[in-house]
Structures are given as structure tokens and as C-alpha cells.
Amino acid sequence: MRGGTTLNIDWVRLEELLAECDLTKYQLAELIHYSPTTVYRCFNGERNPSYDFMNCIIRELALTHSEIQEIFFAN
Image (cartoon, rainbow, N blue to C red; front, side, top):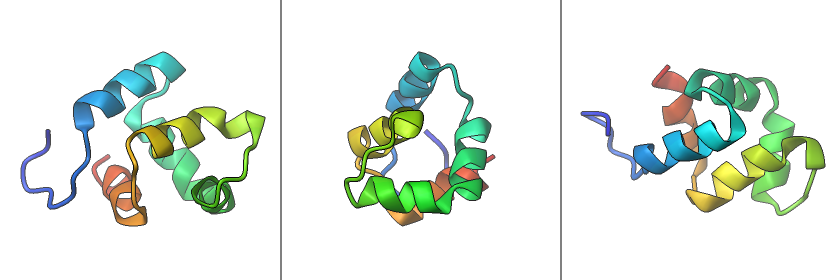
């Protein structure tokens, strides 16, 4: 849990999912930052096997665009 965040991100579950995918929060944030089209497609239900882990994280945590930005800026 981060102090001061106004968003409802389950940071513990995020860490668990990242561990399953062998990713750090920073790596996820970089992927999100540099792949906005992929994130948009994930939000719209499109599937891309190359990014299934990101899709899984976004869906399982029910992340909003604001929360994804929070993850990015938290790094």
C-alpha cells in the first residue's frame, strides 16, 4: 500500500501478479507507457497473446486508466 494514493489499487495483488509474470512494477509501467495501443485494446476486450500478462493484470485488478497512470508515476 502506498501512502497518499487516492486510487483503489490492490498493491499486494499487483505484486503477486507481477511475480507470476516475472515483471517489476517499473517494467509493467514501461510497457504501459510505451504500448498505449495495447492498453487500449486490453480495455476494449481485444486479445493479443504477446500481452496476455498485461491484459490479465489490468482485468484482474480492474484497473482504470487513472490507476494505470498511478502505477506508472509510482515508479
